Amino acid sequence: MASLSSPKCPSSSHHAPAPTSFTGNRRFAPSPAYLSLRPLPKRYFSKWVSSNSPKIRHWNVVSMRDAATVPMEPKKETPSKEVENGSIETVSSKEYQELAGLRNHEKDSTVSITVVGASGDLAKKKIFPALFALYYEDCLPEHFTIFGYARSKMTDAELRTMVSKTLTCRIDKRENCSEKMEQFLKRCFYHSGQYDSEECFAELDKKLKEHEGSRLSNRLYYLSIPPNIFIDVVKCASKSASSTNGWTRVIVEKPFGRDSESSAALTRSLKQYLEEDQIFRIDHYLGKELVENLSVLRFSNLVFEPLWSRQYIRNVQLIFSEDFGTEGRGGYFDNYGIIRDIMQNHLLQILALFAMETPVSLDAEDIRNEKVKVLRSMKPLQLENVVVGQYKSHTKGGIMYPGYTDDKTVPKDSLTPTFAAAALFINNARWDGVPFLMKAGKALHTKRAEIRVQFRHVPGNLYKRSFGTDLDRATNELVIRVQPDEAIYLKINNKIPGLGMRLDRSNLNLHYAARYSKEIPDAYERLLLDAIEGERRLFIRSDELDAAWALFTPLLKELEEKKIVPELYPYGSRGPVGAHYLAAKYNVRWGDLSSEPYKA
Image 1: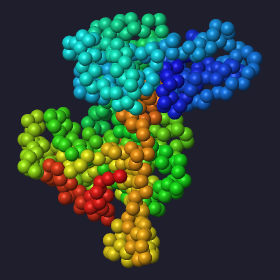
Image 2: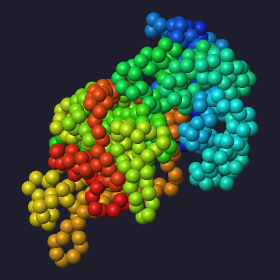
Image 3: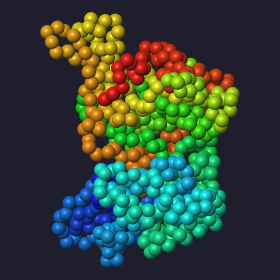
Image 4: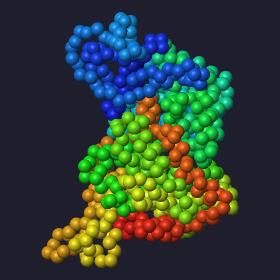
């Protein structure tokens, strides 16, 4: 079976699936004797999952697992394989030649990436630039094709012109970027069609086959479309445009429903045509560098893991703020609100990663199992532990900033929150009693996303007189700044140089821009690469999604049924006053509201 990754890709060492192949319905793995003949590529496929069920008849699935590069030890044993009864069977010369073909794996396979909804903003601003960045870094297979699919009438040349406007030569600022861009655009094509037409997808299938030729064809669909047409696209693609001899995978963008019921209905509908391991539910925050570094920081540094519990941590804050309003997206946003848009997915996913127990391994299922345990251990949100707000118009510096309901696409009587703060709790031995405070809002005073871990006060602190009555000034705090200007810093108490005993609060700081010269890849680059390689660690599983919605659905229904009026706050302010009262209820002070400047 062929591998799809490029050996030049700088990230190609973080996953290394093990090779298998199959003949007919029998699956076998290369024996140690075969593996000893030569080193294997760092990435290669582990197994084929075969099924005779109707819903995956057209969707041949390939899953991937970690493996290591096997050192070369010259031996002359005959390659063998393991059959169903556990005995060892000699590999035929034909099968051996197929396995040996791994040497030319990229020449034997191709990946076709179809961006459904190619004319939309997400595709233009994020997906196509991410694909180009992967190509620029030699992370895409040698043979690949990119198709845009949408209802808009457009030629290949017009698509390339549209895409070229958003591509940037930002990675390492190499001199050959213009040449790379031209080569990339030559691999981009367009097909216009309806989202619910099997005939249109059959025409797309013909075009894909023309580019795939006789190679093993693998297909990835990115659904950059509204959720109400997900099922139409999946149904048509599964019946008319799936791979017949490789895998087919589908990336689904949020929102994944509006509550538990709609989310479950969407999952059931998708599973009429897909298996769970073909569905890649994307949350782009899981692809951000500092979020992925979260488990590294905790599990590979002895200094942190012993502190990661209720014994030392007083509270955890997950903060998301934007310094702009809905900006023309009011119609879409009004159907969801800030809780569904940010808290139920982005912030809750970060919380689960932060609070989970040590997984058995770095395998995707082991990590996702631990995240699900955290979510199932949490209490559903209560209205008394939530504050909602909505920004109003405000004049600052002679400039008038419009309120949320001033947007022409938003109803004048809308009660949709643009701000929310919440206190959540995890009922397990590690985190019992520790408040996890979430805060998310639009049109606030700054743009940021960060995790703040506030530690407990030092018992019997010898230097408490130096801090007066405000012991919070003496509290250690670990800050993980996800964006912008990525950084990790630990606030400590320190003596100011001099003859006296004056204390100061200082930062032990890892500022990424200062420490690393290489620009941090966009989250979509990492997630697209993982989807191509079949790595599911950063994607959301269906039971994980169910557990997440179970926490928020009762609250969302109560807010809507009781028509809770959000507290108004001025555009560009720090949010509703009620958020401070919520924090004070648990003897917590929001870390992002301190008087110190926001800098590394």
